[in-house]
Length: 134
Image (cartoon, rainbow, N blue to C red):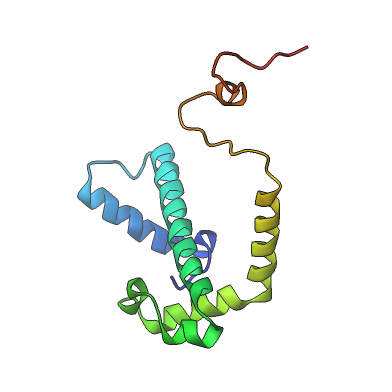
């Protein structure tokens, strides 16, 4: 968690993570499609973990309170990482991006993640029809 974004992690650190997977599973690290897929999985999990930490940070009364009370997940990683992440969450750049994302999500009319059912079934209400194009 020394880096605030997945793209800012060095290629060497990402390679170490890939090597750890290839040690535990029989996969080829030379397959670029597989490497890209695993990289996207790591990216998603990194973002989810950071979002969980951000939610924890927002529950605290103040920036100082958040720094003084790190979540259990961060205690073993070193408090310096938690302090850096708290400073990131408190930065104007992060706050501006977070506010913009909250506003954009509030403008959505409906959630597009519907599972395996087609969106047209859900929009139709009774699940009977498709969109009608003219």
